[in-house]
Amino acid sequence: MYGYSYQELANRMMSSMEEFQEAFQLFDSRGDGKIHVSQIGDALRALGQNPTESDVKKFTHQHKPDERISFEVFLPIYQAISKSRTSDTADDFIEGLRHFDKDGNGFISSAELRHLLTTLGEKLSDEEVETLLAGHEDSQGNINYEDFVRQVMCG
Image (cartoon, rainbow, N blue to C red):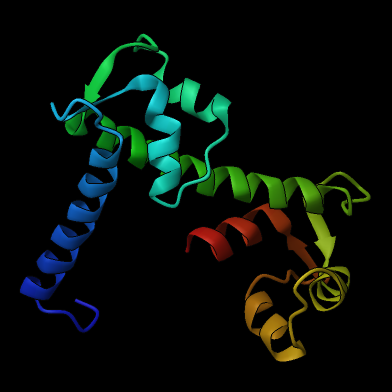
């Protein structure tokens, strides 16, 4: 599977899980294997996530702020936040491209998208842009930007 044996893959997964548990334990002030719900955002940030407070509240609303949760309860919250941030980021890009959708039909010209990708932000080379846009252009030279963003970001 992608050049890894089953054992190597299992070892990598266990290593990641151990990292998650170690970060979780940093917030376990009592040593009882639990953290306060109010610490979830900080624990997520320690694991490389960057949730907003509203993200944290959305995924912890069923818990009281002074409640303490175990790692087993924390892990699905981490996974949900991790997946949520990916889709939020895609939505942010889609919203940005929507400003260039003059007709409001979900398409922008491939020429305009090429221009944006080669001149704004972290500029891409012409070759990189061609690779990204391959297969996305319709017969009129337009690109469905929502499909494009989701495919580029989520595979």
